[in-house]
Amino acid sequence: MITSSLAIYFIGIHYSDDPEIVALIVLFVSAFLIMVDFSIIKSFERLAEVAKMKSEFVSIVSHQLRAPLSNLKWIVDLLISGKIEHVSEKQTAYLQILRENSQRMEGLVSDLLIVSRIEADSLPFKNEKASLVKLVKSLILRVKPFTRASNTEIKLTIEENLPDILFDYERMEQAVGNILDNAIRYIGGVDMPGETGHIKEKGNVEVILKKEGNRLCLEIKDNGIGIPEEDQKHIFQKFFRASNATKVQAQGSGLGLYIAKSIIEKSEGKIYFVSRENEGSTFSFNLPIK
Image (cartoon, rainbow, N blue to C red; front, side, top):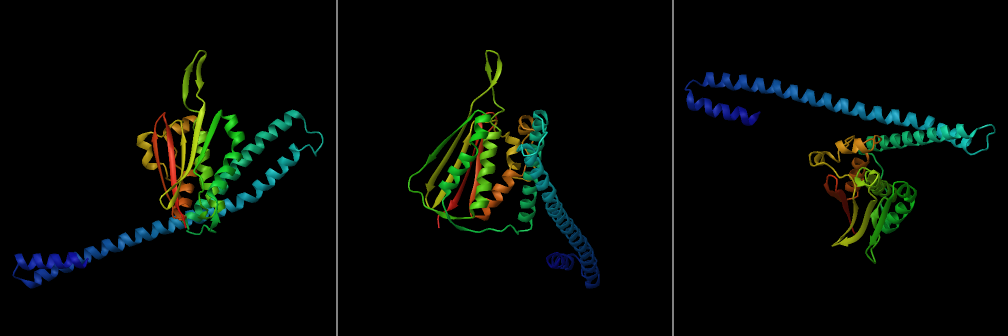
């Protein structure tokens, strides 16, 4: 506003000899700019208020949903365990479906809570010296049933004598788990022609942990469906899913990579990826050695 007023003043005195007219023009323009400025500030205040209300709403709803979901899961587990009599095999099959869906809902609620805390900058981090090697090995062991079910093989390559580094083990476990889960989950979309029609190509995921300068680098490479070029700029956005991903996996919230990126950057790391549609993706991130 000051710059504009001064510019108008000097332009005015250059073209007019009457100082009163120049002063009136400057006052008029200044008044107009004040009105515009006031309108912009009010708009930003409304946007900030709406964003805050949205964040608080997500947080409250997520908290309220956790208790009934936990109770539902406990009851279903009890019924499936066989400790309750007169539960038929057919009923047990239905209960298994109910348990799977309640677990999926519980995971979504947990992700929403984390997102609301990230946006409010209140996600707690407890950085301690820990082994990224141990974390990666533990996650690969945990997803073995998932890899067997999806006909996927994981190859792990770890450089020797890697040091422990500072990070929050629980948070980093979730970040790496989200990336690894995506690598396995979206392999199933690549079809290969066979004698009896189209068959699913065997999935291959390569996990590489190595040292690069003064940082540890983790790469997770897959031969899955890849990410279309036009979708790649949005891949770390909340609730975003690539166009080909929704065709392969109907389920998914689009929060996994957003959460992973937020956790890695909060840990002073950097995350990046390379991907080609129908050829696969490589997600990499690095963390400082301290």
